[in-house]
Length: 257
Image (cartoon, rainbow, N blue to C red; front, side):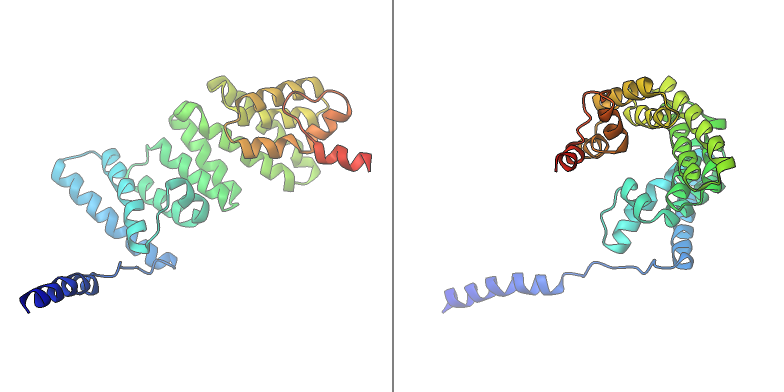
């Protein structure tokens, strides 16, 4: 009898503990107003810690940013990285970096990140302003990553600009790709960006050389494969100038049909 009772208790306790386990709390951060309140709480916490430890504004700003993503993931039941957060929620990311800049306006990284978020929001004027501000503070931050992002913004603007402004944006993009490659000669993406511009200007040999370097350095195999089958590779292949890496197979399969 005792054995039966003991067995019943052992089987009951885990079920009781499981039944009493708290559900993860999901906080509503769906509106800018609710998200602003959330950021205000985190900023107050960072300010209190900075006051207690007698930290300067720059460290308070870093403490604030460090709190944001773990708190957001906990509040919403998500598991985002900063990269995915900025892609999926660029408006919220911009709000985070606005708070950080309000704490310490000397943060080149905060301007770089907010400029990138604005680019993802297609607010290109704000993106250019922030990326230029980042470069003014620390031009060599992340080997000139802000200048690369600014080049991308100019390319996006060129695609929607009237004829009179298109060339200007492309010229600025070319300058920025050149500067990025001066600071980081191993950045494959800037070789592709510069190569595309050279191809559009009819500089085919130079474009082919840039594309060859892109295929050599690009770490993202899926993106490299996409570029390998793109318009520039197809046109270079037709002119027997395609560098190693260009593989416009689908194009030639259509030609043979």
